[in-house]
Picture 1 (cartoon, one colour):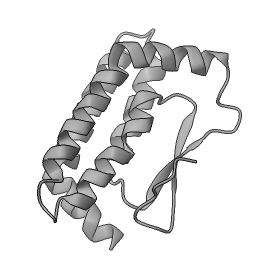
Picture 2: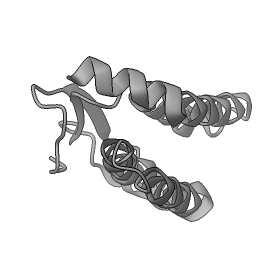
Picture 3: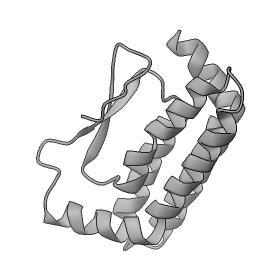
Length: 133
């Protein structure tokens, strides 16, 4: 089931979202000072390609002052706009019954798009994870 949902997701929006995150990661890495955000953007791009069967968790020891400060900067510069884009895309995907699981996956991406630093993506046994651990 996870594989089928991931293939449908990839075809109907996941590839374009991942390419956007990848492009943002390249731009951040070119600017040298923003390399941590670039690495986080690459991590989100990989998650965006194949979101079903994976979830976001806090890194052990990854929630320090620098991570908090970096997340606040990210939130103000890009996070809010990315989250609004995910909500708008989720609304469009939920217009059909087939698109409802895709809309849920899009909403699942919002927490990590708002605060990407200090997080990691781990596999899970269920395709839909409603909690953020």
